[in-house]
Structure formats: structure tokens, C-alpha cells
Amino acid sequence: MSYDKLKTSELNTPAQTEEELDVIEVLDHRALFSNGRIKPEQIPEGLHAYDLRHSDDGGRFCSIEPKVGVNHGGTVLMRDVLDFGKDGYIPLDEDTEPNFLGETMTASEFVEEETQDEVMRMNGM
Image (spheres, rainbow, N blue to C red):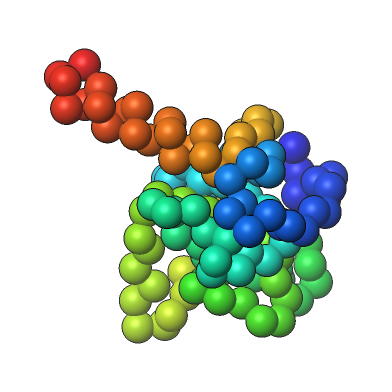
């Protein structure tokens, strides 16, 4: 599914655990995507929020950053901490921009999925 065809939604619930978000892959990490901005108090425990910046023409995502003010393209929730290096952002191109996987999931399901994967790894499965 291309980004242009996604519906716009704002995140309304304080805990942000029950809203269906798009599952994506970005920078080799599985993550959740929202068109809206996510406030710090809405980030579920165990997840980190990063913003995507649109290119000036709005045609694609050009970077992932800790916070984006202008050209905000969406927010990504992921389990992983990203290193933004000295530039303070990670540039995205055709090969590294988010891949929408065509499924949705709530943040609580996303956190639970990781917990189950971790238990299986610890048990040698």
C-alpha cells in the first residue's frame, strides 16, 4: 500500500494502546506507523517514537528523526533505540524508506508480540 492511499488519523487515546496502526518495516526494524503526532504520554511503555519527515514536494519520506516540526509525515513506534549520529537524523532513500506491510496492529499487540518472541528465544525455540 503506498503512503498516498493511507487514511489520515490522529491519535486520541491517552495510553495509545488500542488504536489500529499500520505495520511497517523501516531500517530493517518492524514498527508501527501513524499519520498523526504522538505525544510523549501516549507512547506505550517499551516503545520509542520517532518522526518521519516528508520531502519538500511531499512525495516521499526523506528522513527519520527524534522530532519533526516542518514537513511532518508521520510517527513511527518501535522497540528499538535508533542512533541518529552527529547529524541528528537518518536520511531515507528509495531503498530505506518505510515499507508498508499491509497489516494493522494495536500498540499493545505490538508490545505483546515482542514479549512472546523474547520468551521463545529464551526457551531455545
